[in-house]
Image (cartoon, rainbow, N blue to C red; front, side, top):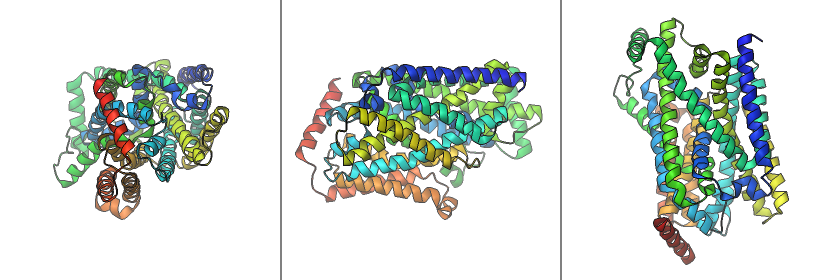
Length: 502
């Protein structure tokens, strides 16, 4: 190992040991299955906000998004704009109501359980189907994080791809299995701050070394003139029907926020709905800074490698390569650790939500109210099982991080997003309407995203048709079925009064 790699590796080892230390601290405070799955619903607004952001912004923030900007330019920035708007709206219109309503609905601690109680679904179909959807799409999501970790070590240290997958997967698995929800929330805070520092530092220092913003723009224009691209255009240089579909698809990423189980889990866990406003400000500010840094890193990468006269082979490594060029090896190692932070924060949250789906919502169908100790260890075993399946999927290193994340994000957004909004804002929705809409949204998204003929004919992000179909089906079926149970309406009004009075 070279001296440079030794410094970087030392920084990453320090980071990984720090995460394990936080996991051990949380382990000592995790005594029951409820602690493991939701940390006693006692997260401060700062922890909830940073944890939601870090668990959301996975490896694609430092690899997929800068890579997309490097390859295509500002037309890909619509994803960042959509996600920023989605973050703000999610904290504004979903978080306070969901925190209150989930407690009123028999103090439910998972999304499938909340749906079952909210709609008084005595068939238990909503709970079981939603749990299965969570497992299916989260396995793809966790696999995308495994792919990102393998690519990270392969690019940074020349390691074998699968070795990187196993190292990151193993450490993440350890602090998730033992620390539970508290462990992943506290590690998310550290990881979120590390990601923020790295995404602010890289574009600023690269711009200074290139000679300032004017020189950066000049070099980008020079590269575009050679390659026939327009990186500085939000329409790709040609405002047409095709570019409009790209813009709509980018903004539509924001729709996915309303249905992401690992983000909504923070709304369940925050101390009170009265602290949501503080969390919203912190969370939205963090996202704006991180998204801006990722977008600028991709664009500045175009200028940097144009100046060097040597384009990148893999656009998704632009952040990694720039950090290694710009900083002392030890500092570069800390910046590289930010990539691991992005990967691991999301992976751990997804593993825990998958565990809750298996233990609380699927195992719970057959045995209600299991012993706390049993629930705790079943949760830990479920995390291990989901990890193994995701590693098997991640053996294909050709899968791009952004594609895998995009597919899973759309699946959750279309299956659960409209259902959450209707559950919180329309008391007339029925159990049958909710179930039909959820299934329709998931099926349409899956077909649209996997059938080549559809993807090639209409280049529109699959979340758009999935969300539209979900809303239409849920509303029509609800209107055609009998009114909800009267106690549902009473509970709905109680939730609305509680949120309005704060």
